[in-house]
Structure formats: C-alpha cells, structure tokens
Image 1 (cartoon, protein in one colour):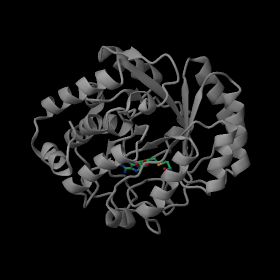
Image 2: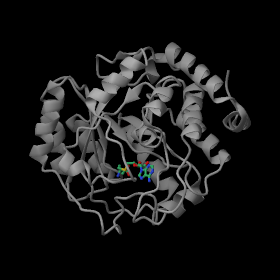
Image 3: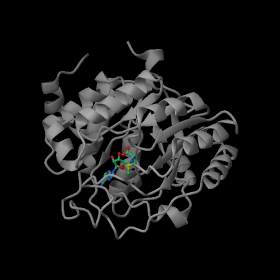
Image 4: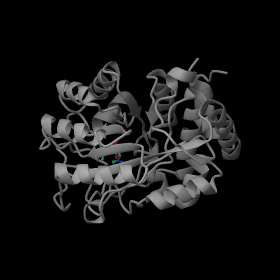
Length: 329
Ligand code: SAM
C-alpha cells in the first residue's frame, strides 16, 4: 500500500508510536531480513569550510580544537578495523579541502587492498571530478545527508548553500554508481510536519540505498545553541515511516538518537525499522573534538554488538550492500 503525502503527515501526528514501530518492523523483516550491519566510522578531520548553523564543526566555531589525521594513520586504523571483522568503513570529516583528491584516492586504494571491505565516503561537497576519481579508485558508497527538503529552511541553515545544489551532488554521485546515503535531521528549528513528510517521500523518490535519520541536538558555540533538541519519539516515527514508505534503504539506529535517548532509543529504532549501527573507531584523542553536537555518545564496537544481541537480531556477515535492486518493486 502506497502512502500519500497527507497520509504520512496524519500518521506522523496521530498514529500510536508502538503501532508504527510494529508496522515498520514487519516491513523490515520482509524486505531487509534479520541482519544488522555494522559500519565502522572513522572521523578523520573536524576542519570544515562550511558554516552550518547547527553544527559544532562550523568554520566560525573558533573554540573548537581542530585535528586532522594523517593519511597513514587513517589507513592503519582501517586495517585494524578490517582485522576485527568490520566489513564497511565510513570515512567522515568536515568539508575539509586540505585533503586533496589524490590524498583520498591513495587512502581508498590502500584500504581496498586490505581485503573484502566496502568504503563509504562522507566528506561533504567536493568538485564532481573528485567523486569520479574516488569511485574509480574503489569507493563504493557516499553518505551525503540532504538534511531537509525545505529549500528556504535549507538556505537559512546552510549559509551560501542551496538544497538544489546539494541535490545536484547527490544525483551525480548516484549516476557514478555510488550507493547513496541521504537523510534528514528531525526537529530543526522552524521545521514542520509537512517538511518531514517531504523528507520521507524524498528518501523514497531518490531511491536512496541508505538514510541516516537523527534528531537535532543543539551544540554550544553555534547560533542554534539555545534551541530545544528534536524529539526522540518524533525521530522514531520518521524512521519507522521511512521503512514503511521506502521499504529497502539501510537505516541506522543513529548515534544522535543514542545521544538523546540512550540505549533504549537505539533498541526501539532496531525494533522499528532500523538495520544498521555505526560504531565509532575514531581514536579518543581526536573523537573528543568531533563535536558536531553536545554530549555525543560514543557507540563502541562492543556496545553495538551487545545492542544487536539485545534486539534478538544477527550481525551482518557480509558487506551489506544495497538491497534496492534485489527487492524494490
Ligand atoms: N561534512 C560532511 C557533510 O556535510 O556531509 C559530513 C560531516 S557532517 C558533520 C555529518 C552530519 O552531522 C551532517 O550531515 C548532519 O546531519 C549532522 N549534524 C551536524 N550537526 C548536528 C546537530 N547539531 N544535530 C544533529 N545532527 C547534526
């Protein structure tokens, strides 16, 4: 059954949470199965040329202690993850142009040589030719959240940027054959239920392979520091509806959800449509300064495996590629 825009808005506002989670869980079982995939994330730099109003990495946050991991440090860490059985490595940073195209290419090539592993890049917006080179070097996926589909809100929150521009990057990445990850922030100041329904439909229509959905969490030293957090419950509703509407995307029980709602929220996410966890492998000396939002929980590898056990699910045994082609009608 297809849900219309109006039905999604009504469901977001009115359906009992437990009922929504159950519906999403049923679809998850049918389209995605019992496996929960572990994507190991390395946050290798917190420098950023952008000034997103909500993000602690924004360029005007002069209070943040900045760091950059060296390419060889990143490669060594990735090798270590692979030895521990991690099948996907997510390389994430602020939009940090100090890593040149060739630096990233060398990192991708070196990691791919280490074994059967998928690489997700999440480096923000780069020249299109960079995406092409990295794809040829072996990068498999690109995570670029669309943040919000409301163009006015997007422009307001991302000085100098547009939703249309973001979309051009996402579409180009898709055309290059990357599996694409999008996703939105729930509870952004000024966001409406209509916007969220738009986000849910966008994830379906763009045929996303993955969508990261987390609540807004205020961060000190940003213009939105005094705004209220997004709601855990509303985030779970959006997540469940994405599973119900879009069916096959990989959906993480996000770190932002864990930060606001603890283990309970992550467990609810796993029971309401989610099938991915992203344990964090960034060395402590760096991760303490990857302050995108306040109080960020560190979801460790062991905690992620515990959660999967608690949810009564299985740990994914392979790279956990896109399910879209296999099962999407
Ligand atoms: N620079 C890359 C990019 O823009 O795609 C990736 C790094 S960026 C820090 C990763 C994600 O953090 C963003 O896509 C955004 O959704 C999330 N984020 C940043 N600040 C946040 C906040 N205050 N609350 C919730 N999510 C936030």
